[in-house]
Image (cartoon, rainbow, N blue to C red):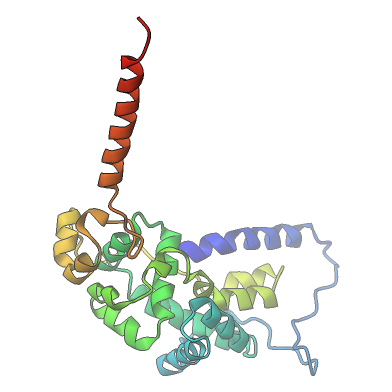
Length: 260
């Protein structure tokens, strides 16, 4: 299981402990209600293995949010949360299942190595957020990158994927469901989670092989900047040489001027 399970685990643990400590005859919390008029939403169904949202509908939600947010991933995430907050549990879970489905299409070794070329070492959580960052760019960008991770070279704000710009989008539906069912361990247990094994497909064996496999990304990121991030690359070799020369000159000058 990947990043989202790690984020939900403390919440599930707290809910479980609170449930175990409550008296057997303790009153149950009232179901979540809309603000106005006060009407309860359906209680959380067993959604872990339920239906996926229609893919066209899913992308319409994403595209609408992205357009209204003017391409900002965090802004788009807030608008997705706003939209899902008006829908019932089954729809929120169906959206999440479709989101996990499209995200998993970016879970190949070539996609991982493209992310590493841009960001350097990437943890499971960073990879999850990076995939969400791509999804948040809309269907056209997603499908291009899903077909060929070298298409990441066309993503102008690629560095944002390394800096957590996709995190809020990654957990939009999770946040809606948790806010609605905070403390209800049974409901939280029913929510779909990201469960991924090792990335699929071929894996390049070294940096040179990665760059040969992703030539457009390689052209965007200098050869000795592998892992330093697009737009943030600094050729440190000259700086280091100057620093060594300055320190060496200072030391030699100090030794030369020292008293006998």
